[in-house]
Amino acid sequence: MQPLSREQYDIWRTGAQVLEKDAHGEKVLRLADGTFLKLFRRKSWFSKTAFHPPAKRFAENAAELQRLGIPCPHVIQLYQMSEPYRSVVHYEPLAGETLRQLMSNDTSLDQLELFARLAEFITKLHDLGVYFRSLHMGNIVLTPDNELGLIDISDMRCLGRPLSRRMRDRNYRHLLRYESDWKRVNPYVETLFMFNKR
Image (tube, rainbow, N blue to C red):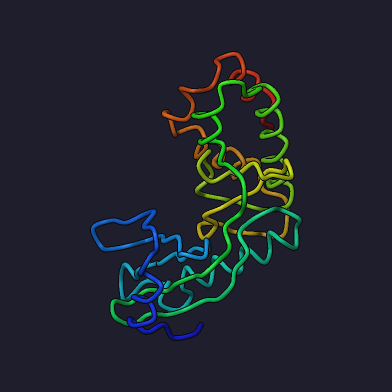
């Protein structure tokens, strides 16, 4: 990881759009050139992230997903900023729209076809050993090439073997807990999705 000075960060910050922030500061920026910066704070000095920063985990997961043929962001560089401490990943975003955006904006969307593909995609991830704890419609993207891919991938493990039934079920529970997403889904389609998800 390369050092990132506050001065360089402020230069990038000029003209950038803040996409996410919380009480601790900025979390995701879209820079003027269209690339993204994602910043991770250390929640505790005794956290395991002190030895394996989330930015590094993001990059490792991106490399593994690319190896597996799953569309995802392309990492440009990793940085570490000292004041305030942040591990930082600079990346090219995955082109396309999230399923959340599609469900909100496209009234002509064929939900039956989309959710049949989603069930197949999740089964593929599980068979490949990908356990994505932040699985929800805001982190699944339909690309311009009509493929499904993943974003916000730091909260992920690639196990190298098919997931157990228990882990698959737990992953689906993560997906289904976002009630605001599922309110936009036709109840008939949701029923078929639940039936075919395994």
